Image 1 (spheres, one colour):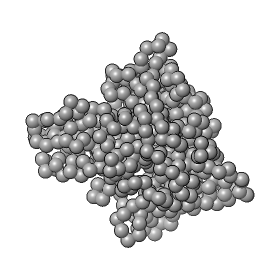
Image 2 (image 1 turned 30 degrees about the vertical axis):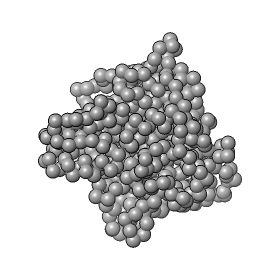
Image 3 (image 1 turned 120 degrees about the horizontal axis):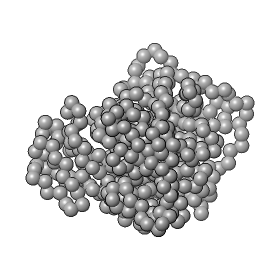
Image 4 (image 1 turned 90 degrees about the horizontal axis):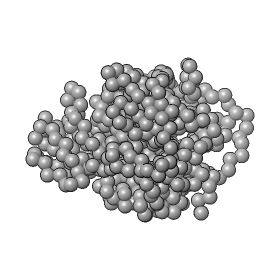
Length: 458
C-alpha cells in the first residue's frame, strides 16, 4: 500500500496536483499547508486550494489532496471529480470495430451567412513557473499575443504553488475573465478579474447590501451574459446558498438557499446542485450536467434547481449518443436555451463529437459535427488530466483541445472549431501557432475561453 501511495504521488507532484512536500510521518507541512496522511505516508495539501480526501471505497485511491471544488471519487486519473464537469470519467480505449462514425443529422442550411470577425480569448497556466497568461488568437489558431497576467490575480495565484485551477468564466461584454476565491469557508470572498487583452488584473472584496462582507468558499461559479452578473454558490451543512455579484462594484445579493437530503445522499438530485454547470436564460435556474452518482460516475443526466432555493431539484436522464460516451461539457448559446456539448467518440480514434440538445422532457441530442484530432489533455500512464474549455456564438463553436502528433506520444494545444453558418457545419482543428510556453499538459493547462467580436487591439 505504501508503495502505491509513493508511486501515486510521484506521478502527481510534477503535474502540480499536490504540494511539493511530502514523505513519511510525522508530518512537517508548512503553515499554509495541511497534512494528508495515509498509513505512514503523507502529502501536504495547499490550504488555499486543496483539501484532504480520505481513501476511496475499495481502496481504489489512497488519501489524497483534491481541489476544493471537487469531491473524492473512484474514477478517472486522480480520484478527484468535479460534479459540474464530468471530464474525469474513465474513458475506455475506442473500439476498432465496424461501426461507422455518425454523419450530421442536423437539417442542412441552404446558404452560408456572413460571419463577423471573431476573436478567441484564452487563459492558460504556463510553466515551468506556472503563471497565468492570456492568449488572443483567431478561430483558425493564429496567436496574436501571449501576455503574462500581472496584478492582484497574479499575486493570488502565486500562493497556489502551481496547482491547477478550474475554468474561469468569461465576460464578453467587458472582455474579462472572472474568478472568486476564499481561503476557507469563513473567510471573505474576493473577486479577481483579468483583462483578457492586456493581462492586467484587479480584485475587490465582495460586500452585501448592508455593506457587510460575504463569506464562504465559492463552489459553483458562472457568469450570466444576459444579466451581466456573476452567480456563485456556497455550502454549509446540507444547504447551498446562491448569490449574484455585480462585477463592477462587488455588490452581492443573496438569491436563496436550497437544501438536500443527507440521508438520501447522491440519490437526491440536489445533493451536488451548487456545483454549477450553467444557468438558465432568465437567470433564475441553476443547471448541473453530469452524474447523479459522482462517487462512481454513473446515472448521467441534467439537474435543475431554482436559484431562489427550496427542495425542488429535478433530474432528467440524458441518453448516451450513438457511437459516443456521455456528454463531456456544457455551454449554452447566449439568449437561447440551446446547449452545446462535447462527447468523446467510442469508435475510431476517440476524437470529440459536438452535439446540440435541449432540456425537453425527452432531450433531443443531435450531432452537429465530428472534430478531427481533438482530444482531452492526457498524461502518459495516468490518463485524462485537465479541463477542455468550450465557447459558442451564433456563428461558431470552439474548443481548446490537445491534438496528437503522428507517430509519437507528443500532443499539442489546438483550437477546434465548427462553422455553424456553413451548409455542412465545416470543422477545422488547428495547432496554436506558436504553442503556449512549456506546452506539455503537465506544465500547461487551459483555464478560460471566450469568443467575441470585440476588437483584440484595444
